[in-house]
Amino acid sequence: MVKMNNTKDLEKLHEKHLQYRSRCLNLIASENYSTPKVRSYLASDFGNRYGCYETLKPEEREYTGNRYIHEFEMATHDLVRDVFKADYVDLRPIGGHMAGMATVLGLTDPGDLVFEVSMADWGHGLVGPMRTIEHLEKTIRVKNLPYDHNQKLEVEKAVEMIDAYKPRLIIFGGSGTLFADPIKEIMNRTRHLDETFFAYDASHVTGLIAGGVFKNPLDQGVDIVFGSTHKSFPGPQGGMILSRKEKPFRLVGDALSPALVTSHHLNRLPAFAASLLEMKEYGHDYSKQVIRNARRLGAELDKRGIKVIAAEEGYTDSHILLIDVDEFGSSREISTGLEEDNILLSDDFGQSGREIRLGTPEITRRGMKENDMVAVADILAKGIKGEISGEELRERVAELVGKFDSFEYGFPGRASEDFSG
Image (cartoon, rainbow, N blue to C red):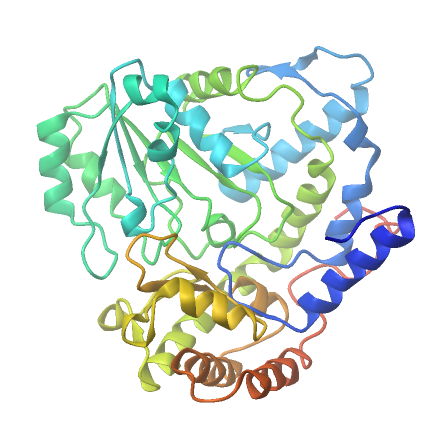
């Protein structure tokens, strides 16, 4: 284990990480590449300050010295409202998972039933992990929404389940979202359940929603959207809560703070604001290219004998592909093995042991287009099948990623330049 005795040690270790990642082909769907300008704003003085406030009273700060922090935070809220077409915005969650926890705790009472996407169907595993805490296991009940083999929500079964069990909260969305759920149809068919809240976990697709290429769940009528400010969205790590309805928004916000978060890590805000401005300018083109790359990668893998989930449905409408590698080994063995060859993937978190998730956000930001997916697929297929040596695989990865050492769909320059957007 490396020890850090001084800042030179720190810098050396950090440089090792940067050099290592520069040689990697990153297909992790939950990661992205923030531009140097966005990342430079993380050095803001905001990182040492407190901006605590009540949910619907952001102007009444608990700490003094918030004059311009408040102004900046409200301006960032306005950007979020514009980009995501929301009326109410909360940026206090320091992650998408925390935003989801607040949604569950705010919209349910002890003993209530929650429907969510199971981990086996690439859900985020929100309520399930919460119930590993004993008193939450005793107070929150959970059932899983039905999905078919193509990772599409089974509408008739879902409606039957909702009618039968009358859940208090239904959470759509997850970590393996290939297609938009028909939320509006389901809500129209269950309007008689006027005490049921509908939420959407947009953690993976926030960037595609912002880019206008994936259905906005707010347009479909959900009460709450929660999610991450990274993943397909190329901002700093963090979370957010969005709504067009005051009551559920207040309930969730009041569950979030002060129980789950007080100081909400203000250093994220300038970098997030910069990424929002980037998305306003480049987001539509970026998001379209992300999906084009994912679909082409799916088709090229299919040609090479890799089983791609939902091939008959066009592979995906998002940044994600799911592949079944069972005939070549377990998903964990393959993903960890390819990591040694500088190919970064994520498996199915120990569920089936046969699926791997791929994502195209970072390689798209690095400048790859559809034709480059031929080389990506060839490298990946040969690696999964073990057709070439690790040394040759690493050489091919280095040659490919070496052609894409810059970025697209973002602001050039440094933070010292004018931040007028």
